[in-house]
Amino acid sequence: MSAVSPKREASEPADNQRPTKVAKPLDGAQSAGAPAAAYIRTKLPGFAPRLAIILGSGMGGVADAIEDKTEFPYSELPGFPVSTVQGHAGTFVCGTLEGVQVACLKGRVHLYEGTDPQLIRAPIYTFKELGCEIMFSTSAVGSLREDVGPGELFLLKDHINLQARNPLIGPNDPIGPRFPSLLNAYDPALRALIQAKAAENEINITEGVYLACLGPSFETPAEIKAFKILGADCVGMSVVPEVIVARHCDLRVATVSIVVNLAAGLTNEHITHDETLHFSGLAAGKVTQLVKSFIAANGEW
Ligand code: HPA
Image 1 (cartoon, rainbow, N blue to C red):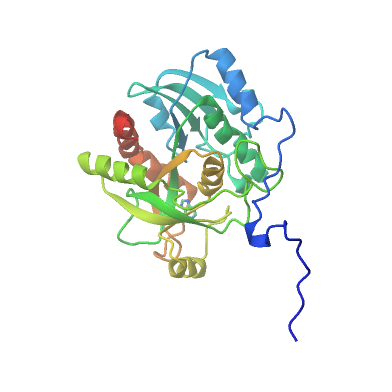
Image 2 (tube, helix red, strand yellow):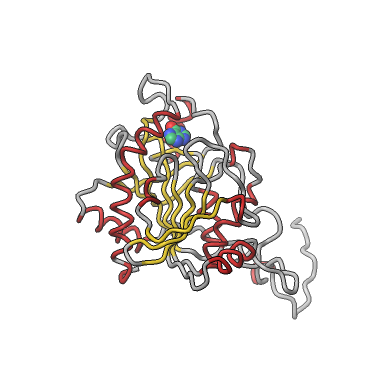
């Protein structure tokens, strides 16, 4: 005998027709990015960035290209987490690049530092609160593809989150919906534009899927073999939490990753963080060029 379902009142919608429950913001509740944005506005009245940039390990040099800079140490900004990793300076840079106002995280925090995932939210929501439309993030990765070696670039087209963490766990920030979609998280139109700009500048770039691990240990060769089967092209310990938060507040996302090593087991070499800093430093020039020509094409965003 089949189970009898509880009777539904005629006026009650079926479960699959109920609207998604969104955690209601308290009256007057503000986004976790509002305090830092308000602070920055008091220091820089009229600052209205269109683009947000996140610089990964060893890529602080990209920030050198920003003109008319004002830098805020993360410790000065309400709600911001503070990075402890070598090569991650930890300042929020405001300025102009190719004539467009930009806001930039120079140095990021990683979950392997023991950071509460919720703390990833404030810097990204600050971008949104300041008026940014796009978040261009960069990172260092290990490549699962021998044809895309150290010094080469990946343009991310999707991700696999194996960090077993999500920065949106906990009360929903009023800036976005309780259950955001991650379909086309890496904006297809922006990817096409970056591909075009890379070609113009004779920079090789390969679209790939990023797999996020928690770290801080690198992977085992067996894990890398498994990740290949899952469909990953590159592996790293960052990017994903920020992209989730960015999509939550409807920032369009583009991510370029520098290959700093072949993933574990693809060679017999041990992977080191010094290698990361070396290759990201070498490729940072290409990334700067790409970011600049992307910004110069802002009419096409
Ligand atoms: N694995 C994880 N994260 C990384 C790697 C890697 O091989 N290289 C740079 N970041």
